[in-house]
Image 1 (cartoon, rainbow, N blue to C red):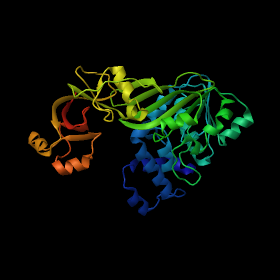
Image 2 (cartoon, rainbow, N blue to C red):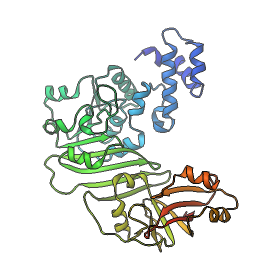
Image 3 (cartoon, rainbow, N blue to C red):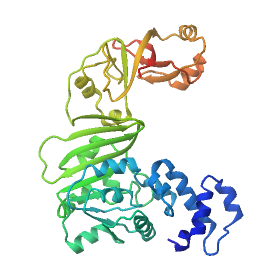
Image 4 (cartoon, rainbow, N blue to C red):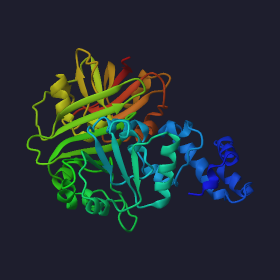
Length: 393
C-alpha cells in the first residue's frame, strides 16, 4: 500500500471525484507526485462499489480500498453482521482474512480475533483500516494460515474460512474440494485447533453435494439480500451427531424473512387450484430446496409439484417471500389477456411454464410495470393458466 495515498490532499481529491467518469479522469493523469492515476482510480472505484455494500468504509474518512476483485470477493456489511451473530467465545481465527470486513464484525463479538492473509498489500490495507475504525482486538498475520496453526499450536473457539472459488488457473469452481484451500481434505487438520468451523461458500454451490463433501455439519445458513442469494454458510461442530438444521434469511429494506427446517426431511403436502392468495417464495427458500417444508409448516397448498407457487384461503403474513391477492384466473390465451388489460402493462413472472417472460411479452405486447402481476404457470391438473394478481401490502 502506497502511504502517500492516505495524505489529506489525495484523499480529498478521491472523495471529490467519487462520481467522476474514471476513463476521462485517467486520461488527465495524476495531479500528485508519488501517486499514480491508477492508484487514485482504484480508490475511486472502491468508493463507488462500497456506497451500498460497505457504507461504514465509504463513510469513514481516509479509508483505503483494494483492487476490484478483492472488493467483489469480500462480504457485505449485512452478511458480515449476520455471520458475527453465529459465533461466541473468546477467540476466533480467520484463515482467509481478505479485505477484513468479516474480521471487523467478528471483533465486535469475540474478545480476540486473528487475521491471516498471504497477500501483503491486502493485509496492510485491512490493518490500516482497522486503525481508522479504532479496532484493537485483531491481530494481523501475513502468513499462510495453515502454517500459522501448525507453528503456534493454539486452539480457538472458532475457525472461519472463506476459500477462494477460483482454482490455480483462475477458473471458477463449484465444489468445495476444488476451492483453495481444499476444506474437505483438511477438516481433520482444522479440528485439531477448534471444535467449531464456520465456512463461507459461493451461493452457486450445491447444498447436497457440499453435504456429501463435509462431515459434522450442524447448520447450513442461506443468506440473501433483497431476494438475491449472497452466501451459503456451513457450521461444523466436531463429532456432531444428529440432524442438520437449514436456516434461511432474506434481508429486505424493512424486515428479515426467516424460515428454518431440517435437512433431508420429506413432508407430505397438498395440492389445490388457486385460492384467494398466491405466494412466491424468496430466493433463500428456493436455494435451500424448502419447497415442501414451507407448504407443510405454513399449512398452504402448492399449485403443482414443479411450480413452486403456493395458495391459501386465509392470508399467511409470515410467508418468506411475496404475497398476492388473486383477482382472476385465466386459461392461457393471448386474446383474453389483451382484452383484460386495456393498458397492456403488467409485471410478468413464469413458474413451470413453457415460455419465457420475453417470449410472452413479444406475443402479447404487454409492457413492463404497473400494479398488475401476471403469473404464467401450470395448475395441479397440468393446465397452463395465468393468475392475475395485485400485491398484498
